[in-house]
Length: 161
Image 1 (spheres, rainbow, N blue to C red):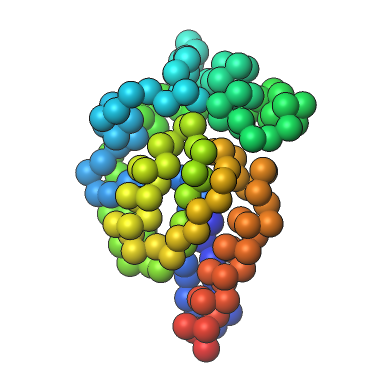
Image 2: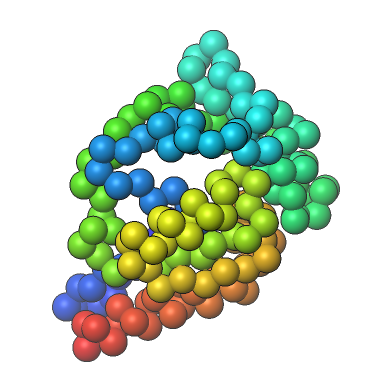
């Protein structure tokens, strides 16, 4: 998710790229438990400090499935862990309730089901594009992601002007 702002007067919009769009009272864990575990998260493990990690195989072949394998292995090596609490924390009032939104659905996402991404986009009223991408569309389809962000910024600027 990216927050976009323009000059004065200040108009802000949100851009979601293959991301969760939680509503008030929802948690990642509750949403993820509603269906089968996605391939990218099938072997997610939690270390002794309470941080979740993806295995190399799941990261390279599912999380970053449409990225060059060498690049995907580098991404795996520098992955940032996810605090276990991220799955149990409950969302307050989301910013998308009061800000314009844009959403990129990754049609081949193996981390968040694409139908779930479409649901998030619909309920937030987001201007939506779809790309034939896995979860890390910003790496595998940077031109499309850049264009979506530019479109959002232009719309925010037009609203401010």
